[in-house]
Amino acid sequence: MDWQAFEVSIMLAVLTCLSLLPIGLSLAYLLVKSNFMGRGVIEAIITLPLVLPPTVLGYFLLVGMDNDSFLGSLFVSLTGESLAFSFAGLWFASIIYSLPFAVQPMMRSLERIEPEIREAAWCSGLSKWSTFFKIELPLAWPGIITAMVLCFSHTLGEFGVVLMIGGNIAGETRTLSIAIYDSVLAFEHQQAQTMSLILLAIALVTISVVYSFNRTKVLRF
Amino acid sequence: MLKVTLKQSTPIKLDVDFSCESGETLALVGPSGAGKSTVLRCIAGLSLSGHGQVLCKNETWFDSDTSVNKTPQQRRVGMVFQNYALFPHLTVADNIKLALDKRIPDSQYTIEKLLDQVNLSGLEQRYPAQLSGGQQQRVALARALARQPQVLLLDEPFSAVDKVTRRKLYLELNTLRRHLDMPVILVTHDLDEAAMLADSLCVIHHGKTLQHGSPEQVLYQPINSAVARQVDVRNILKGRLKVHHGKLMLEWHHYVFSVSRLTGFVEEQDVFFALSPEKILLHQRVRPSRGEQENPVAGIIRDRVTLRGITTVLFSVELAKGAILQMDLPEHVAMRNKLNIGEMIRVSLLSDAIHVMAE
Image (cartoon, rainbow over all chains, first blue to last red; front, side, top):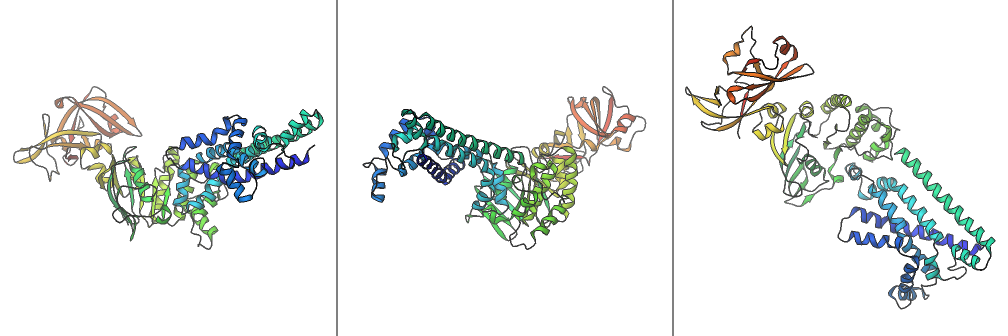
């Protein structure tokens, strides 16, 4: 069992979730509320990682993180380190490839809130921010939880993109799914099985929690 | 007092102008899509009108000339939405508490008082999904009043409840509105509801105010045929004014009727006239009535329908190219006079009951 890879995986999944909470929510809110030209294009771009082969996405991200690229050179000038094949690069890539898993459920739950509910809050004297925190956020909560769990599980299990941009640096970019792959290649089946079972258990528990949470919410509303 | 003047051509055509005194209930009536709800939304600040003013007491809420447009939060309106729009994740008490002024020291007492006002005590801890339609409407009303609004806006508040509950809620609202000291605007497409609950009616059609007056005036003396159609006047006929023996009379096919009120009309004018079905006088066959001399008309009964003790008789007037008139009678009168289909009847169109309108 590669505990270092486990730690990297958990750290990556938690940080990705925490980053996607404000990013995903802002994007979802913007897309649900506004009706600007090109909304469809933005939605398509956000959803793209869902349908794109991970190696293709990984390739483009790798190119984008190259030290000669805008993003890569900016990161180098800020930190003095290369973005590709680093934990920070992996984190950034995880945010991109988990974005549809965050934005889609959040959008669906925000769309389900009837406009009159929002207007009733305004007529009750609540400011737009109060309406968001006291009415919209609690009502969209099941969607937000679903989004977070999906992002967590997806980041934890991602393989292709991680391999493309992170490589296989122990303690830095070597995640549990990479470690499983390595173990299988090295014929260490026992180790691969233990790590696979851990990922399976985490996935099962998180999905069960989401389902039971959403059911209690649905029953109450 | 609330004064509303709104004008716009898109997205929904509006040309309305009305005012409502404090303590008065004004019903905006008209068919679906007439623009009633849009007017309400413009008053609440939820929709923006192209031109016009919304003035409440001494405050300007909206004025297109001076670019004043207060937000719904600044307007202090109490609004009951058609589907109530209760906050589903909050209890009844919390729904109301959210609309209460934060400076109110004893919010618990105020919530109880508001719930008592709408006959909903004891359900503070329920969630909206655990309430019936009627109870939800009462919570919506309590929440609207919690804001201590300067105007109370009710958007089709009875459309989502069954008939029995609706009747009960009518009576409750009727009692409640007597204690309210702000203007109340009720949007409805139900004329009976409007006539029962409002002090004045404002008929809106295609976004335009057609008539504003007391229920009696609007329902029985519509200013033109368009209003008459909107308020469901059943006998709308076309005639012409002529002078007979020195007096202005109404000519309808072969008939010439005397009419009580004809001020403002002139000779040879084509007009519409309305006959209230309940004000057509039936001549009893055995005992001719005094009214027999007044605008007598003969017809053949074509159909009869009885609902809740009122019989509507449809008869065709042969001398008026078979025009069909409707007459309402108490059921026992229809039975006693043996008003069967195919029978000939004679009626009087009392000169008081003929309401002449411009085209």
